[in-house]
Length: 236
Image (cartoon, rainbow, N blue to C red; front, side, top):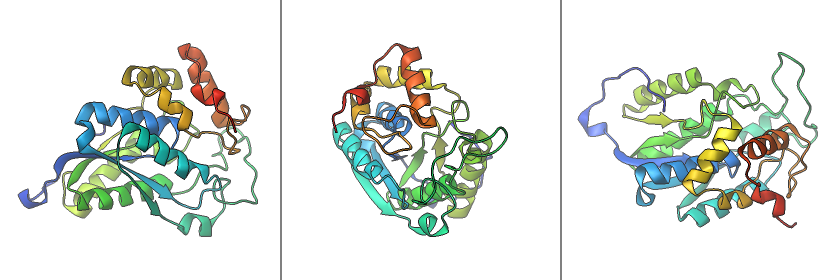
């Protein structure tokens, strides 16, 4: 959970105890969806998925299937600016996913993505009187993305509170968890079966390719948790 500085908020701008989950269709956001359901109750949870021109369109389908399985409404919102900007392997079809050199960000980093996602999510949540925003970012087992860090989310929470004069709270349940711990949490929440509908592979393969950085990290987490990843049994 992220707690930023207190801001002066007028009573009329207080939002309800409802939650909006940013659902990418991946392992982490799926775990967060089930976390939100447990914490706030299924009737108080919605999810939003962003179509940002990602090269692997299967993410959108996966997010819809995960939300449907969880019994939660999901809305896909288009944000095509990232594809126009290019310069990263997640939106540029001409770029291959590369292993980053030490001290450099991987070419899968989409500059500003999480900042934009959370801002759009807040605008979406504002219309629904939902004050809780849930995202699966983490600064432990991650790819070094600066917009996944706790200090980034803390600053963003304060900016959203001030900019919309509302009592938003950003929740990051996985922030300090390893992938092993994330898998264990998913098991406790009853989310393991839903993992069969998720997508993680940078190469867009189902079953996963098993050798890209994202696949290796996911496999490591399931292996250390002693749980078989149901995505491995998915047939093309």
